[in-house]
Each structure stands twice: as C-alpha cells, then as structure tokens.
Length: 136
Image 1 (cartoon, rainbow, N blue to C red):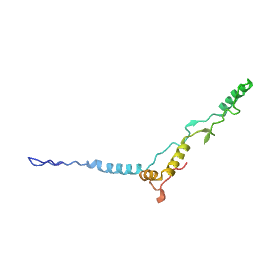
Image 2: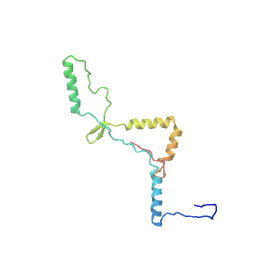
Image 3: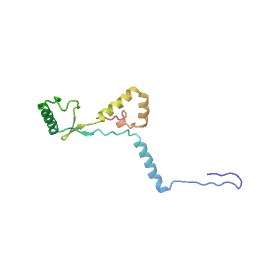
Image 4: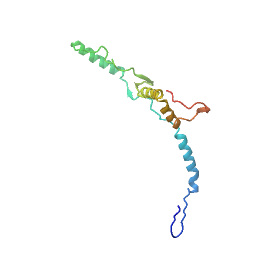
C-alpha cells in the first residue's frame, strides 16, 4: 500500500506463508477440476411403487364396491404410469427421465445457452476424446 501527501510514503507487503503455498496451489488446481463437473442428478427411485399385495387390496375394494352397485374402475391402477424395476426387488418412480427430457428440450430450444453452460462445466475429456456426457 502506498500513501502520499506530506511526510513521505509508507509501503507494506503481504505474502502467503511458505508452509501454505503448496497446499494453496493444489487446492486451486482441484477447484479448477471440480468446476468442470456438471450437475449430478439423482437417477434412482424417488417414490416406491405399490406392491402386488397393495394392488390386490385395491382390487378387492373395487370388487366389493362393484358388488354393492357402486360405480368403480375396472383397474384400480388405471392412470398410473408403469413403475420402473430398479433391481433387487425395488420398483418405483423416478423424476429423472422428466429432468433429462427437460435438459434435451433446452438443448434443442436454446443451443447457445446450453453451449455457454457446457463451456463452464463438464469439459473434462475422457481419454482425450469428446467431453464426457452423462448416460443412464
């Protein structure tokens, strides 16, 4: 810092301590790599599907209501999307396909905006090839 005016000038200097220099350089390099990571969405199930026992219970209620002359749907699961089998006995619904569809729509509607985003994130190249692209 330099000061002026009557009485001369004064100078001071700030520096990074030697013990912190290498870790600081490594940390800055790591942040440069980390900023290349795009958003990492959760792609697993968000909501559990009905079990076969639950579906049978709903069908029993529909059948009983129909026996009493009430208007009922033929299938209590009508209108529900098909659940996804995630393996290991896990079936459910995921919002990821809708998220992925919205990203693709943005890419088509506003490729310039998507290119700007991609230039900031997701530029790490695997094996020197094209930028890495998420896959499901």
